[in-house]
Image 1 (spheres, rainbow, N blue to C red):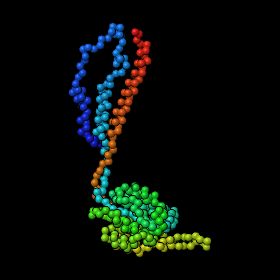
Image 2: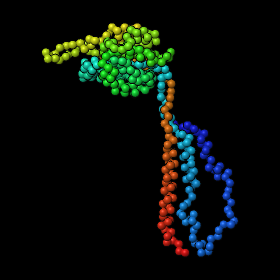
Image 3: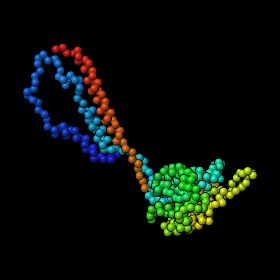
Image 4: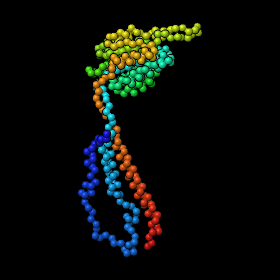
Length: 337
């Protein structure tokens, strides 16, 4: 439906009529110049100019359009359901050098760990309607890439633009946990959740995972840890092909202990299929808030009547100019004195 943001401005519509009747009338001087007999056939300059007064209906139409534009018409869209209470969910992603190992199977294709993570984690982010999401990238140090926001598109874009080695080659798990806990806003009605994805162990940073764990427990933060990496990978060398464990540096004991003490869960992602199941399980453990409120999006429409008014004024100016030109061309031979 269409509504007006400032409907009271429609009271300006009769303003020209009030000005016309309330303004003082100009009296005609009795000592007006008399036209000589020889010039009786010549029209006055005002008449000879070919200009005509603006029709009253034309001027009234322009005034009505301008007043309607000032009143700011707007279109009220369909009702949209928005959760009234969500959760604060921080996502910490490991960008250490080992994330470039191509040991993950995604839709039948062998890809590196970060590529698989971007695609599947992006789908998970898109489903978190109503949650405030934040993104932390960590390597040698931990950095807040995206503060807490409802803009899931921006969070997903920042994840897609991340590259391996952006924040170093090592793994600062403790710093990432501490930074996430620090960024959570104190809200009793909000769940504070951290999803920590890594493929190694803590090898850098100023804070150890145990110190960060104590801080998370004190702040009532639930941490879900995900260890990413395959168990077996074929490695080619000069002596042939052999099986290796690309996840030998993954510290599963620490990740499981972190999840247990914060009332979360530890997951092992060995390929794309297991990663999808993990995100589906996370949707069940931390469901999107169902309590909702309604809102209706607004679309401004004031520029339509304003544009029509401007076009009408422009057309009137063109009409008056062409009328003057035509008259000036014919008047050269029209009067003989």
